[in-house]
Image 1: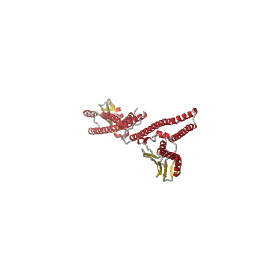
Image 2 (image 1 turned 120 degrees about the vertical axis):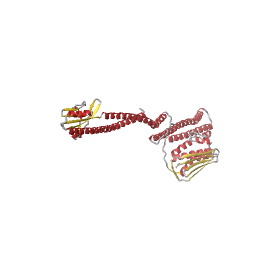
Image 3 (image 1 turned 90 degrees about the vertical axis):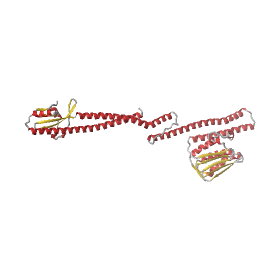
Image 4 (image 1 turned 135 degrees about the vertical axis):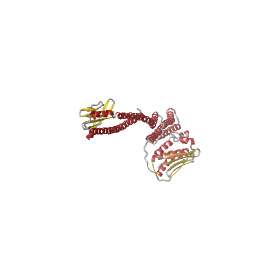
Length: 455
C-alpha cells in the first residue's frame, strides 16, 4: 500500500474513532439530560395527581364510594392514573397489573433515591415510567409515556450518524487532496532517485517549501550535485588514464623501436668504430630518456594515489643552490643564464616536491629560451615566479599544456628528451601542497609561471 493511501487510512480511522467517541459521549449526555427532563415532568405530573386525589378524599370524606372515584377519573379520560385499594382495583384501564406497576414504581415518600432506578415499563411500542404513592388505604400509580423521548433520542442518533458519515467523507476527500499536495515532493524525490539509479545524475527536485520536506529536497539536490560531480570526476579520470596509457605506449614505442633497431644493427652488421659508438650513444641516450619517463610516471602515480605530503622548514638558499647545480649542465648546453633571487630565509613545504617543481619549470624555460637568453627565478613574499623570454606558448594551447604527454612542439620536445609530463607533475604537486599555479605566455615574448601558497 502506498504511503498516501496509508496516511488517508490513518486519518480516516483517527477521524472516525474521534467522531464515534465524541458522539458516544455527547449522545450519552443528551440522552441522560432528556430522560432527566422526562423524569422531572413525570414527577411534577404525579405530584399534581397525588395532590388532587388527596383533595378529593378530603372533600368527599374517607367513606367516599370507590365507584365514584373511578367515575371521576373515567370522565376525565385520564387513563394514565391507576388506583388500588388494598387488594381491590378501583381504577385501571391500562394493561398492566399491580405487580407490574409496583416492580418499576418510584415512590418519592421513601426518601431512598438509590431505589430510583427509573426502570421503564414496556408495552408493544410504548415505554412508560411509573411514579407511585400511598394515600390512606389507596395505592396510586401515575404512568408517564416517554416513548416520544426515546424516539427523539433515536432520531438524534440517526441524525448524528448521518452528519458524522458526511463529515468523515469530507475529511477523507480533504485529506486525500491535502496529502497529495503535501506528498508531491516525496513523489518527485522518488522519481529523481529512480532516475539517478538509472544513471541520470543531472536530475534535481524543486524546493517548494521551507519545512522538513523542503529541507530534504535541498539535501537531496546537494547529494545529487556531489554524486554528479564525483561521477564526472571519475569519468574524466578514467578518460585521462586511458589517454595517458595511450600516450605512454606511443612515447615508449619510438625509443624502443630505435633501441631495438640499433641493437639489431650492432648484432648483424659490421660497423666502423665510429658507427658503433654512435649506435651505442643513441641506445644510451634513449635508455636514459626511458628512465626519466619511468621516474616521472611513477611520481605521478604515487601522488595520484594519495602519497602523504610532509611539510618541513626548508632553507631557501640551500634549495636554490641545489637547483642551480642541477641545471648547470643544461644551461651551458643551451647557452642560457639562470638568475635566482629570494627574500625569505626559510619556507615550510615539502622539500623534494618543491625542488621537482622548480627544476621542471626551469628546465622548460631553458628549453624554450634562445641562446644568450636569461631565465629568472624568484621567491618573494611567498610567491614563486619562473620567467623566460623564449618562444612562448600559443593562447589556444595554454589550457592543455598541463595534461599528461601534451607537448606544444612535439619534435623539439622529443629532441630535448621530453615526454610532456613535467607540467602535469607540477600541477599535481601544486594540488598536494595546496598551492595555485598561473601561466601567462605570448608567442615570441616568453612565458611566466607564477605559483602562490607554497609555504
